[in-house]
Length: 314
Image 1: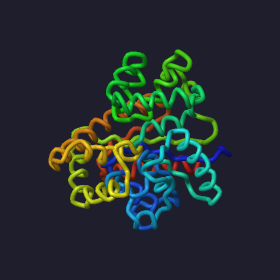
Image 2 (image 1 turned 135 degrees about the vertical axis):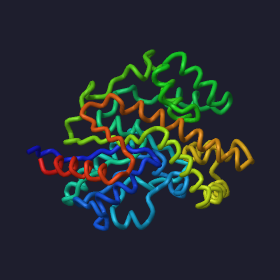
Image 3 (image 1 turned 135 degrees about the horizontal axis):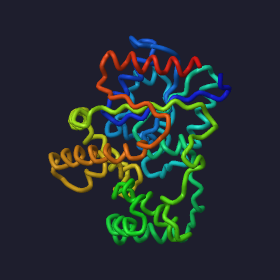
Image 4 (image 1 turned 90 degrees about the vertical axis):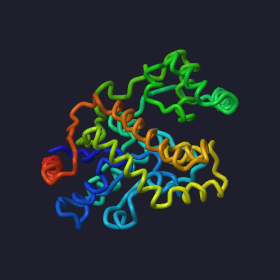
């Protein structure tokens, strides 16, 4: 039996059914409860305070039933990157394990999960002068122009970065201009193998695409019904702008592009579906993954429950 800390990792996009699954398996009120666990969020936007509806954070009831970590950490004007996530997740895993609970890293940011499993790639240290120059260019020329520049010099990285993600566009360009090598050429520590720090079990929830996209569209409608507009307006009233890192997220950035609520709704649905397609590219080739064609059926709950029980006991 391994003496390393066991860590369950679940890749699951918004609207894939992960909230219902975690409640079923890890809440004592769930009908398939198997063991005590604590959730480490792997959703990059859940770290932001005040951004609850648009990021589909777990509700207060679920957070009381199952402890959650790495949500509501910072305000939307602060930057949070993959290095912050991996370092914080590592600490949380050890602390959760010390309490006799199973750490469960769960979310839909594939970039975060990939780096958590493989380890951070040893890219060059940031150069403040160059970074500021690139940020100034973003402000003057816009995201799209620098994104197009990135597509020419590092198409592999560009394919995994949203055109609105100014931070990661700047970082990828910065790496190239610092050393003359594309960021995608830097391999994570394991060089194709998972980190030896933890004993991982990696599960991918993959609903059929047509079902997932329909659920995403329904989720966006539910967000509007729950008061998404009020949440966004409140954040803007507090002084957060389209340049604030948190406000660049899907569900928030669209409110700066139009005054037509129906156009905003449709843009969020479109961007969310495109985001879902892109996130799967990060986790396709991860070794040892268990892919579940997930539709939230009783049989699937039992199958996943048995997989986790076997992993935890061995």
